[in-house]
Length: 267
Image (cartoon, rainbow, N blue to C red; front, side, top):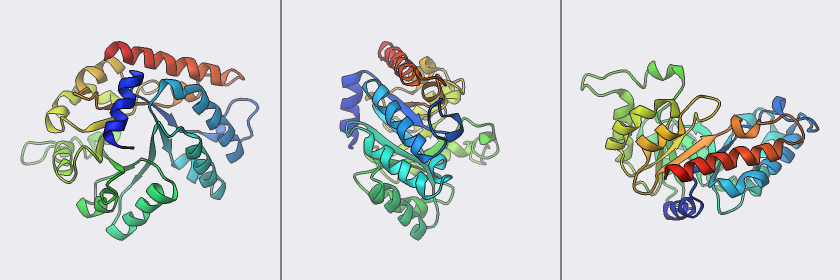
């Protein structure tokens, strides 16, 4: 999916909701087997219930990889069930030396045809180049994350006076255009979004941390929105596991709809 197609989908739906399929097999509602088959059935029901209210799905690959071969099959079936109108993200946080990254890129852009993958930039440009070589795909780079440990490295000040994450954003943004590059910024860092937008005004931001993690949607939108909206706000647990009963799909639909309504009001 191209950036313009994603922007059109956001405008048409008046929503920039990304539903995170962080499907923990231990949290599946009653009636689902605690295995890959249960994940597939649950994910399909969630996708069917939420597709009208979102523009994207993000699959956290760790929840599938930990189940071995069957988990990979569950990821493949889940991806295939997502409508082609929706932007698909492999939340894999890869990044390694060039030859290794090339195989990661092939895995998540060809074998599993995602639109985008999240990557860690710690090893520098040559670790990201194999992903950026796919001109029709998106590379989503970790920028400023919402976990407590972000202060250990990302928020350390350099001799230049800039914070490390600011330098990362500035440097990585010079390696590719907003047509194939996005950044991750945690929702609990909403107030930093204003200064982040000064560094990367035109790139899309993937913003996790709304809902269970306590991020504020109104603040994220106020400080993070750009001329094309430029936001994909991810919600996972607050939608996926809004009910542990047989009404889980209905509750997921209502939760996604509520986020979508709030987003429309904020645009």
